[in-house]
Length: 598
Image (cartoon, rainbow, N blue to C red; front, side, top):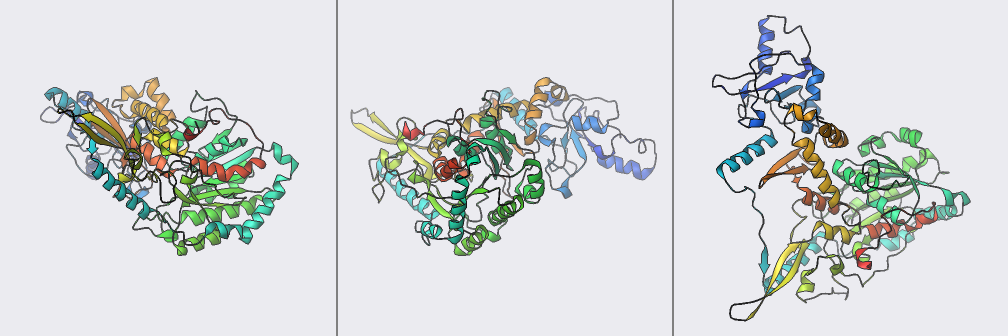
């Protein structure tokens, strides 16, 4: 197939579209058939070239392009095509001799578009234009907001109303009483007691299957408990989550970590459906599984979602299906190899949803609220098949221990209703994951600013802010920087592959190194935002509708991840009985104290 390139009648460069499905074929080039020529012209649409200097290379000569050459020169964002199968195309688009190729389907190019530019090119042109015209940056930073005391009190009442509407303050029935009298749960307890009496258990290392693994909160809890882990099979659809997990646990990914002698498996299965349909293959390759953990999607159960569909929803089906998977896994690996599981979801309010879920697991969900063990609220249900200890609320834990100096909950700063109706310290509201709620008014914190006016009169104002990533990490019990440091590194490394615009740059060792390390991000839908004289990278979250795609910068994505994860103190409390089942050891970096314990 020939390459169409050169200049148009006005002397501009041209953008060329290639069809890699027929690259290397001589049949079409040697034929003069009119129909073939017409088909060729459809594929080789010529468009005016961007004025960006980096893309201005052009040539009037023609040459052939092999399929392998084209594939090797595809931009990182399009290297892996994630488009629906029926929308995938073999056409590539380039902006000149040295410009990288992009997949037409990934950029929704299906017709002649003379002014098309890649998303990064658009931002670069905008930056160049600003520099030439000495224009200020286009993005507007949010200014500081201040409130008087009465306005702040109104906000407190408004936030409390919103939070209570998101939670089910009155349980529909006493789950903790039900679980202790459930026949299936009592049977699970007897099995647990029998296992703890087996002498060989004291030297057994655990094989962990972490499904819907997120950022690895379950593994953090196991390490804090000192449970000796042999292998972790990590299954997670979001590569950002997997990056955060690897950066904090896997020394092969992060050379600064101490080798913890755990085998980490990532590529065996990328989605729950993959392992669900391959239980036999899972056991054949990795042997019997000791612990299964996971938090299936909650969108169809959370009261925040007005369109939730419960167990009948596209996301809601994962919870009962996960329960069925666990039961089949136990049967196939044999009851002589006991399987312990911990499954999490939001507090499920509707009995028509709870009943089929309870039927699958054989036990009711165990209710928890992170406020009993930490500085923040987080109502959840857990399904577990080993002894559950009731939580003894620690009334001494205050949110203040996790906040930056001078900041506090509005009620604390205003010295107004610092304790709830039960006399306990007020806790931070539930962290959520959606873009609309990661920084809504429920996340409010205040700082008291005292000033003296020109007349010498004392003036008090209250500076408004929302919980930072670091504060949320601390309140959820993670090591400091667990998410944010990983996200900062990810964005730094993504710049080395996403901001490459020429084939020449793609041949450098630096590009090859980071494109190999970050290959799980190829095919993600990125956006670029101009911020002063720099470019900010925004990453999309998976499992979204085509009409509502949310892109996050590194700080907002960090908050999104923390809104989806477990509370470490809660999961650590629930998993504690497994310390009696497996060998013990210490882990570097995971013997830390929670911030409120210092």
